[in-house]
Image (cartoon, rainbow over all chains, first blue to last red; front, side, top):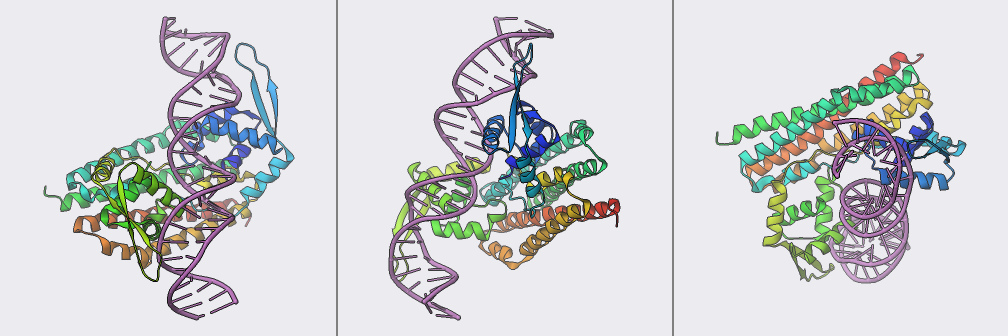
Length: 181
Length: 181
DNA sequence: TGCGCCATGTAACATGTTACATGATTAT
DNA sequence: ATAATCATGTAACATGTTACATGGCGCA
């Protein structure tokens, strides 16, 4: 339901092409709302049909032409309505937990190795959160309030992954305690 | 990729019908791997075609017949392989963060209200984690190791939601500080 | 010569959701 | 009566992924 609204949200910031949107998704919300380019183009097509956006072809020299989308009054209303609607809990798909749920077949050292590989991935993700790529997005904020909100989102990712990492590290300790050293 | 493996994992515990599986998903892994019954029946059909499971109709009096699925050698291999494969990071869809990312249109008190509604939902979810429904599942554990793993999974949910709740509460504090009281 | 960026899209497939469809039994 | 539980499934739709398709420019 919500890719549509994320796209409207970006276009509300400024008129954008599908390609721009794709880059923005990858540079910013990708961690909590991934979107690939076919999905974006398809959704833009639908938004256009529904009159939520308008498109305009901008000719460019040297590089291919762009199709720039702008938000309409209807789109702005839709976005405003969605933004103020009741928040939903993330419905996670957590493949690692499923894996662990059925890991009884494995030897404890193997399970420890799984947790260690998982912790490593979490650390890599945390590094990316701490990297400046994320912070650069904050520059586009149009107000103090917006910057504050975007900082909250960043903080959410960091705290969630730190929490997950702590859990994994505690799990490793616990598993080592029951494993024949 | 992984509903298939979750189903194999359950059937490996004991032979089960689609209906049983549906109940087990709702009672246990639902928070980190939701599955609806059409999905389960469809996946069972495919697993049967692929020779990962066999089915047997069990006639019952008073209640409708059951179609009980059992795991095959092939299915057990597939499961074993998957369980020991490289763990993947959860790729979240976090609609609330998207909502907040574009909440600049709203007045600060409205944003606070959103966070409060969100925090309320988190608390409700935590209550369910602390409820005994989750703990009852632990009874089915076939070994100390399995019980330990299942406890880890429970702990993961609790710590993740507690962390998220703390984040939301801190956010509310921060927003109140910048709002005209 | 080949890779990567720019820029658009489609096709096929996989996965997930909601609604439809049936029908008996048991408890309120 | 009516709702809930048992038990199976299909159909239609929405969403997400991977691969295919095109084509120019600039850089190494």
